[in-house]
Length: 356
Image 1 (cartoon, rainbow, N blue to C red):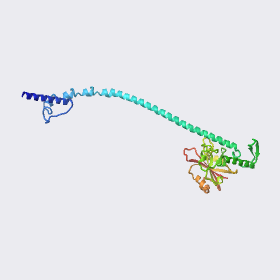
Image 2: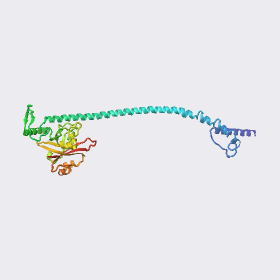
Image 3: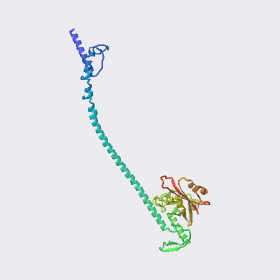
């Protein structure tokens, strides 16, 4: 019996130890019968006993002290980890972010500077290239005028005596209108020998003074000079579909509006009605040496699909009906076409003239 009671006592002791361990680990438990038993009911141990005492375990005891673990203890100090350390970490992080942001801004600034320099250099090269091309074309056409004074320059309406330089011995001789035409024809032949597409010469506004060509298409002379040099100034050229040249009822001539004011740039002045009335004559010297005089009667800003282009090529019989303000009884017309100062690549300036 003594052994039995000793065994029972040891068993209860082990059970109490296990219960204490459970409480230390925060494990909830009840008795087997969920009554007023030793460990789960409202008896000795659930009242104020050793293992259910709220004060001992949940108030300020070794394992339930809220202050120890949640106020200022070793593991629950909010100030320690949320104020000082977090603040320090946040400051370090913000400092790193500011340094990173500053480096990024510097990188973006340098990149933009490099891109700006590259674009400015490219634009400058384009501008300088255009200026050089315009200068080269201007020099070329000046040489042509000086070489063929019989063809270039203002055209006189009356037969007059003119002074012509004799190229053989550099002496100056005077010739009358008939002799002038003879010299002019010789010059025209020489111009045709230089460029077989040569078809005539145009003179207007004392600034438009150029040879005229007609190619096999409307592309070649956009960027080719009279001497065959590749240059954006190009040449004044007739629409290639005018098989009869200046003898057709409607003739279309194309030319560039250049930066230096050469080629067809001065046609813009015809948009002013007063200017048009004072400077209305356009002279054309044909390949055979004869001359035609046209009078400007209209000018407008339009586009590349204007009906006037189609009329000039395919339906010239309707020209007097379609062209704006066309003179009565006019049967032959000259259209001068160039680009404008606008940003639209399809925008055009058209000048209308009638043969007088």
